[in-house]
Amino acid sequence: MKKKIKKILIANRGEIALRVIRACRELNIKTVAVYSEVDKLGLPVQYADEAVYLGPAEARESYLNIDRIIEIARKLKCEAIHPGYGFLAENFHFARKCETSDIIFIGPNSKSLNLVGDKLRSRDMMSKAGIPLIPGMNDVKSEVRELKKIASKIGYPVIIKASGGGGGKGMRIVRKPEELESGVEAGRREAKAAFGDETVYLEKYIEKPRHIEFQVLADNHGNSVHLFERECSIQRRYQKIIEETPSPALDADLRHRMGETARKVIELSGYNNAGTVEFLLDENKNFYFLEVNARIQVEHPVTEMVTGIDLVKQQIGIAAGNKLELKQQDLRQRGHAIECRIYAEDPENNFYPSYGKLLLVKEPQGPGIRCDSGIYSGLNVPYHYDPILSKLIVWDENRLRAIQKMKIALADYVIIGVKTQIPFMLDILDHSDFISGKLHTHFIAQHFAAWKPAKAAENLRLALLGAALMRMNKGQRQEQTESKTALTPWQMLGRWEMFSR
Image 1 (tube, rainbow, N blue to C red):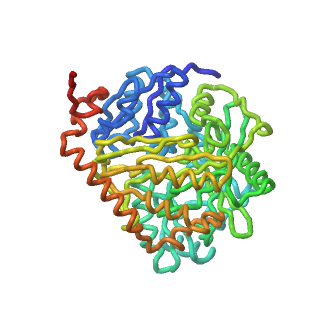
Image 2 (cartoon, one colour; image 1 turned 90 degrees about the horizontal axis):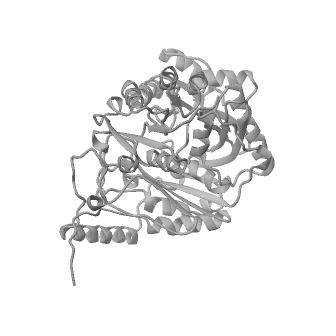
Image 3 (spheres, rainbow, N blue to C red; image 1 turned 120 degrees about the horizontal axis):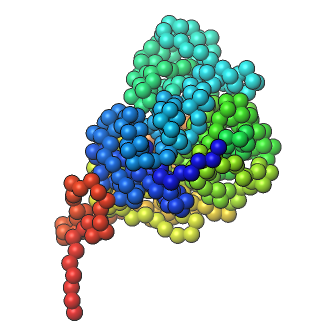
């Protein structure tokens, strides 16, 4: 049944909230941003049609506060809520609360979300349907002694994973029996903090696999398509930092088999809306189902660049009850796209988060360059959330040209005030194994464990910092305000004077 969506509440922050707002503008849909105490000067607050204070900085009191978000949506007569990624995006309780409140959840229905969001139940169902799986657990075991028995059976090393979420949260590699208990406890703590669910499970750990995911779309009428793969093997702390499509590892036959398996996974689970089916690909080109990520992915722009399809608009259309107009036989990949995630973190210090005020932000521009950003000069980067600042995406006719374009774009990207891993990613793009496509999830650990920035790059960073500080000392500061309304252009420009001649 089709429903008219006139206003959407975005239950998220930063670049993904802004991304959804832009899609809504193009669809002539009004938007409501919600913000925590530390996000009152964020770009979503400035760009949305309305903005409402959500709660204190702590996520459980703001972006994880289901009742408060539903209350705001009802009060402002929002027909739908878009959860973005992270926070409540894969929380079936939230999806169900939206459904019972007669609010459209822009994501999968709560039943399928509950199924695919529970990695253990999902594994069990896929195993029975003959989907290739990594050896591991298919049901809940809470006692450490039971987990030790399972680990011994499947063989070390094993990986501990959170059942209720993704993004690397709660993941631990365990290579020895004596490390299992402490790994499980740490994984549970992190899973509880990130997803509100401490359940973890074990899988056999595959050494040096590729991480390949397939973008899928499924409507409410039984139609589904995949929009090809994304190579997500360049990771640190189990989280992706560089993604690309097409994958240099896949030929046409393997791409077809993996894509059709992804569609089968979606159909088995009764899934609707956008999502990804994740696979590990071993050195012999055997692929194994990993999980379903039931949301829009951080790396979705690379798919948009090579297919020309706006995935957020597709999400909204499916949620409104529209049938997919896309046909699998008509879909094509054109050219090559690469995304680099820009985080506020220190690659010299085990990627430890870097927080503070952004003194200067200068984003790269040019043909085939896209920057999905949630930052600007003068913005404070808080310590309460994931430290992603923006995503830099490039497109070109082939992979080598795309790599070269990304190197130029990264070199032109200036962020002063916090540390980022831009110099680190430039060195990855220059590595001979990256250029030749010899990728795996241990690429960084193998080639960049003792990485340090080149002296020239550090000197450039210090010079830019000095220039930014001189600019600030001359009085060109970001205007501070306690107002909870959108900033005016004059406030965003900082101090200014008018001269006459």
